[in-house]
Length: 420
Image (cartoon, rainbow, N blue to C red):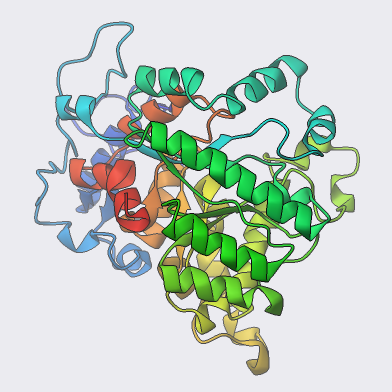
């Protein structure tokens, strides 16, 4: 469930009509702080400070701060109905129109039993309590009954489906990977055809054979109607900035579809810093570190200089890269000239990267990501079935944003970027 406690790092200025800080929600805290400092609140962003304005991403709508264009009251950024009764949504549920707000979730996993022969052995070694694993697997293997019921119960209109990890990345034989990818994509296409208003899809690619991957990418997009690609990090230890994958990037750019770079459950190598601490290897930290580093390889490897219209999506609030932008840029001048790319790293994060919220239900993190890359580059996702749909949707609905910006995150950006 979303954290409705106030930020602890700063005490909001006292105001006669304001509630005590211990009772304030994030929204009221942000609004009170902004009002007291002479700043305005737009789309949940505090503006008015030149330093903060300089950091804000182009397109983040900061320029509308003092106009109140979306009906944002500087004391109360959004208006809403009276508190709802127990069992309803949050007491801070902002307005009745949100009850009907369209929601598109873009990192939602499925699997096809038997498609990846290594899958069963890898699943057995996952360091997760058995009951949790079995519930995950039950939901991964289901493409309709459990999934649609969960979507209906939580107001999710569309899931963009992608093959779970382990996926084809664990297959050594390129021919086997090609066959598995075709089977998975065909199964997904059938599920989408049966429920075209509820599902869309990301293709699985056999990148062990880049030429075959290009052929399958073209088929998946032009014949099956998929909206992009999701790939689980490395290709048996190889990364997508390497020269053999340039034809794949060229085809992605030509087709105008994105590649969602997702963590892989099987790491490319062992990091000794994780020894004895398996909790660090997976989603709590290791996946973010490795996937974020892979994305930086794409930037520093010149992929986006060669293919400026290509893009990647990064889950888990951009694998935290939006929060590292200033640090990345500050090191740029120290890179030897022969290894520099055409722009600062922040340029690529704001022009070639999309961020999704999957698995990070923090309003503080959402505010930071939007402030860094712009509201038009942040998309909602749940990470079903590994995260709770109810908690993720509540996090979205209670986010401190004006209705237009919230709608962009909830569905508008996905519809634009993916052509839904």
